[in-house]
Every structure is written in structure tokens, then in C-alpha cells.
Image (cartoon, rainbow over all chains, first blue to last red; front, side, top):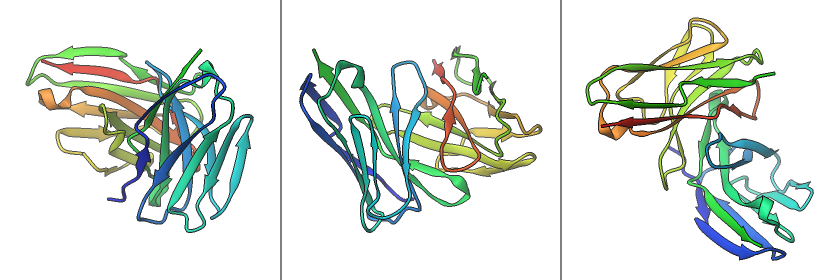
Length: 110
Length: 110
């Protein structure tokens, strides 16, 4: 089973600060996705990256796929309380299957 | 557009009891998945289906069975519940790389 390691597992910062969450593996993935999950709800897809080195921006969120397609990062600029949640990375395998990292629980304090 | 609907939302079972979790999607997606989510372990794939009438085992299939008799429905069964199956269960569907998740079923086995 291919594994995805996310770091940090927990992050608590003040509103307005910047942060980066990492997702690493020793395996190559066909795609890498990021999801955000709020309490009592299912994960919601934020972005999919498929090409090594690809960078995608979603407002204040910047996602990057590593050149070798083994790792990814999520950078949030000027974090806001609404960014609070559980962030999950997921790597694409065959038959449209995804393997998920264990998640990064992010808290933004006002 | 309802997306992915899971029923029930909460359930308490006694050890040895059986139950079926229902997942329904109205997006005409080919692929459907059942995951369980436990603290610190992310989402782990139980079973999945690549089309009507087909199912396959995921990472943690023991103690569970599934059926996909209709394209829009994917059922997860527990024949004899055990405390280790206490978890939050998520169903997801996909037609490509991105998953759409249901809001989950919180199952407690006592």
C-alpha cells in the first residue's frame, strides 16, 4: 500500500499568518488532490494536480505538485478563521482509487 | 442536486448485530467507494465499485460486504458488528479524479 505522510498533523496559528502543509510519499502518484473537511461533514475537493511541478492557486491557497510526483504542498497566505478545518491530501492510484494522508488539523485563531 | 446521500447518519449497534449502510448518488457516476475514518489514521478504503454489478476489496475489507445492484446505490453491510468497527463511514462517488463525499455515518458498536 502506498503511503502519504502529512506534516504537521496539528497547526494552530493567528489570523493573518502564513502557513505551509506538506504531503510526502516514496511512491509516484498519477495525481494529487487536496480536500478540506469540516466537523460532521465529508471532505470537499479543493484542487487536483496531475503534472510534476504544477502549481495551482485558489484565492489565498497555493498548491504545488512535486517534480517527481511524490509530494505536494499547500500554502495559505494571510490565514483567516474560515480556513479552519482538516486538510487531507490524496494520491491517485489505479481504478480511480485514492490513498489519503492522515490529515492536518488547522486552527486559525482570531 | 443532492449529490451523495448516506443513511443513517448515526447508529449504535450491539456486538454481533448486523446492519446495512446505504449510499445513493444522483450524478450518474461510475465509481463508488466506502471509506472509514478513524482519529489519526485518515481515510481508509474498505471496498469500491467501478460499475454496476462489480465490487472489489480495498485496504481494510475484513468484516464488511458490499453490493452495487444499481448504478446509483452502493450498500455496505456489517454481518456481525465488532467494537473495532466503531468509526465514521464515508461513501464517495467519482467519474474522474475528484471524489464527491457524503456527510458520513457515525457508527458506535458497544
